[in-house]
Amino acid sequence: MKEIRQVRRRRNAVDDAEHHAGSAVQVEGVMPTQQARSGATMLALLRAGRQALEQGGLDNMTISEIARSAGTSVGAFYGRFENKEAFFTAVQAMVISEIEVDFDAMFEALEHDDVDVVQMLHAISVFWVGLFRTNRGLYQAAFKHASAQPGVWTPFKRLGYKASGMIVEHVLPRLQQMGLGTEEVQIRMAMQFANGLLINSVINDPGPVKLDDPDMEVHVTRFLCTFLGVPVEPSAVAAATPPARRGRKA
Image (tube, rainbow, N blue to C red; front, side, top):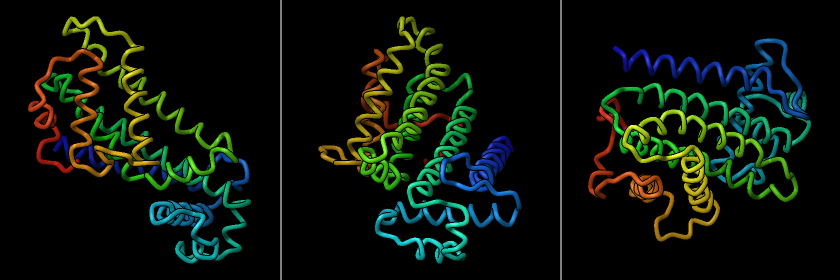
């Protein structure tokens, strides 16, 4: 029952995040909506844009194709978005809102005494690798347009800083209980390195471990453990799924 309640709360929270993104996006070049129907149209366009990003990028999709995919018109698009740049920013805001909701839900599920630090770091790694896989089109588009739109990377920086703060809040007490003497800056640095690895994997995917390799999460977990001085056997990392999440697809 607890798992069901958590899933329901998470789904409701995501719905709220999508509704907020669809009806009240505070982005330059995006017209705020006042009516439910208008908000639903905006949300449909944002979802179509997100799908386009993951299927080849907005640059390869015309506004008429986006509108058609959303079941609306080009006029409706321009009634809500000044141009593609504003549209991309709105899509980005919606996705980041969803990621923040999912991150909160993950830590809520991990708040058990029987979840040790290795299990928690592995859950974080699974989540973080998964969000890059799921949103690689968004990251690639942001990287591509970063030189022309300097602020396009700012939301990702804010997300990373907020996420590392939450990781500090939940992981640091466990590390200190182990007598490791870890400080906040070390955890933030560890996540900075992990984030850089995954961004490079999204943009260049140089290997030897590629983003879609099934062992990527294990390697990220081992790196975090090593950097933070957590003693762990390599074979233990692969089996580090927390008790509350065993049997569930990551």
